Length: 184
Image 1: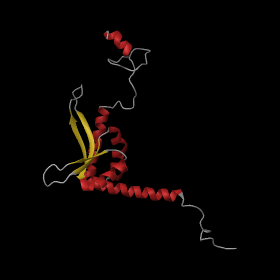
Image 2: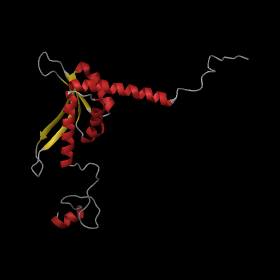
Image 3: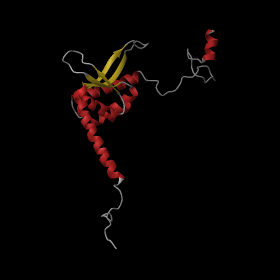
Image 4: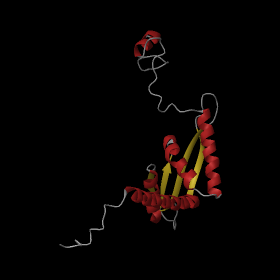
């Protein structure tokens, strides 16, 4: 009888999932820190004023994470977009003679900023000037959302008339109650 069959008698099974997963997580972690280094050099955390102001007179703000690079470096922006799983990419022509065309990555959705950009910055940005800028931007973003909460995820508004659960058409009431109120 043959003792060794193609050298496989020592194989006790496939590579354990825990070691494969650990290697994958270490790779993802190193990719995250690499991309954070690019963000530290080229990223921009913006907060700009939007018009019109709120009905109470307070300022309306827009929060965005953006990063622009020479179009030759677009693969870095694509890698960041793939790593975060959100955002949009666009290519722009050169703005002046002798300038190079650029590519821009941008995330402006509050939900995406909460779910992806802020955790990325908190996890991977090291203690640099960009980290301080990120933390100031994040704190301003959280304070703005606390003072102007979003209605996202709260569902449709329902009629304000007791016992009526139909969706609102206008003036806080459903279509039939709207007709009763306005005659339209």
